[in-house]
Structure formats: C-alpha cells, structure tokens
Amino acid sequence: MKTKTFSKLIFIFLLAFQNIFSQAILKSNSNLFTGHIYSAESGLPIANATIKTLSRAGLRYFTTDKKGKFEIPNDYKKTIDFTEITSLGFKKEVRKGVLETIYLENDNNELDEVIVSTKLKMKNELSFLEKLNTRETNFSWNDKASIYIPKNSDDKCIKNLLFAVSDFGGVKNLQYLPFSVNLYTADSLGMPDKPIFEQDIPAKKEKPEHWTKIDISKYKIKIPEAGIFVVFIILPENAYPIDFIKAKFGNNIRTIAAVPALKAYNYSKTYIRKSYLYYECDDIENCNKWKPQILHYMMDVEY
Image 1 (cartoon, rainbow, N blue to C red):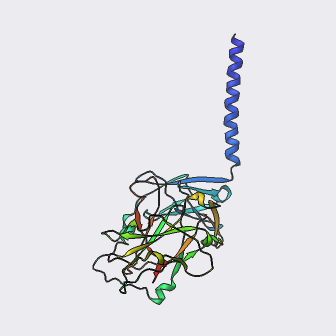
Image 2: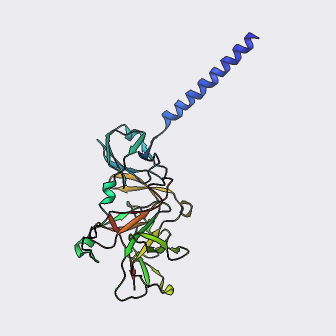
Image 3: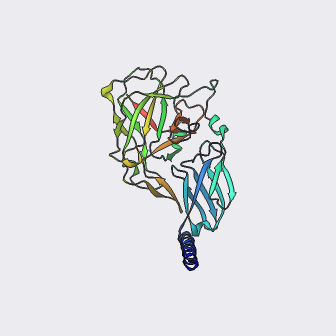
C-alpha cells in the first residue's frame, strides 16, 4: 500500500516538474517581449501609445493595440538603453530599459492647451505657409475624427464632403480601404453632438487624388448658425482584411492598425476649425467621448 502511494507521489512530482520545465522552454524560445501600458488613474489599457526606444542600433518605434499591449523583439530589447512612452492626454514617461508593465499619469495641461479663450480673435483660414505644414495621422478601429466647419455667408447647400485620405508610415494602399462619413451638429460648447444622418455613409477613395469627394447634394443640407462637424469614421476591425501591419519610419519599424489615415495641418490656436477625436474603450472617464486634438484634420465641405 505504501509502495503504491509513494509511486503516485513520484508520478505527480514528475508531472509538475515537466509542466514547469515546458513553460520555461516555451518562454525562453519566445522571440518577442510583451509589455502593457495602462492609465495610472483608471488602470485601464491605453491604445495607440507610442514607445520610442533608443539603443546603440538607433531609434525604433512601437505602438500599443486596443488592449494596451506592445511587442518588441527579444534580441533588440536587450540592447535598449532608454525608452520614451507618449500618448495624447498623458504625461511623457522616460526610463532606462523597458518594463513589462507601464503606467502613465494623466496630463490635463496638454488638453487644456487646445481649449481656446473667447478673447482670442479667430481666423477662418490658415495662411499659405501654414497649409504647407502637413502630416499624416493614423487611427484604430471604430475611431471617429471630426473638424468644425463654421456657417458660410452665402447660405448655400453642401455639395460634397472632402477628405484628405492618405497612407501612413510608408504602408501603401491604406488610403484605398473603406471608411464611413457623417455630419454632426455642434452642441452649446462648440463640440460634436448628434449625427445628422441616421446611418453613416459608406465611403472609399477610388482615385489617387488629393481630395476624396463624397457627394451629399441630394440631402440639401445647409450649415446652421452654430456650425457643423464633418466626421471621418473608421469601421470595426472585422471590416478590414488585415488587423495590424508593420509600418516603416526611416530605419525603424512600427506596428499600426491597417486602416486608412488622414492628413492634418499643424495646430493653430486661433484657427476656428478645431478638430476632435472619439475612440472607444472601457474607461468611462477618458474614452467614449470627443477629445480636442492639437492638429487640424484635413476635411472640408464644397458648395
């Protein structure tokens, strides 16, 4: 009886040892280091955070997915000297090496900068030189980007919605992927409020032209006194053939969501056409609402 009991104990011990040994082998064979970035205030993951790494091999960039996860090749991770983590609405974090779990503090000052004082004299157009300074902006699934359009003096109906749809990070043909558009009313604070069209309008860039035009002339819409918002909408993840894709920035590689991008002008505090971004997550305090952006998305209307 004692012999059987002893044999069972030996069997259980060997089984447990084999399991631990197998996990160690799998971990050592992994080619990727996985980390996560969270909000220090809410504890929820931060999507689209940028991880800039500096090593003797140069600079490389990585991006978190919607679960706040990022991946770095193990061989490269060992060479990293410093890491800089940035995300809109959070304080920049700079540290030696790279940690598996990183928490970012909220940065209210960054968002306060885009709230314009009523004492400032607003301008309706950017100068020629200001319009030369453009950049690409990338998004993730279900994101919504909007720009404010003031009422036109001629009180004309809108003929077309215009979007400067683009690729991002050197990845070709992202600009030809589908998206949706809509118009939103402006609330009492001058921010996007409610959609004008009950259903978003499907859209897609077909030609390699600067502006992608969406004809809405049949709706006979005039801009109200409070102004209106043009809205660019990224579809759900399952609407795209690929989820993530590697983008090249010089000699650096970065992972991005494979969705269309928009061009944007650099931020001007006095430009009346303010831009906002809406993205979904489980953080009730910081997500699922429109947030001001320190840029001007290149969207417009044509009469």
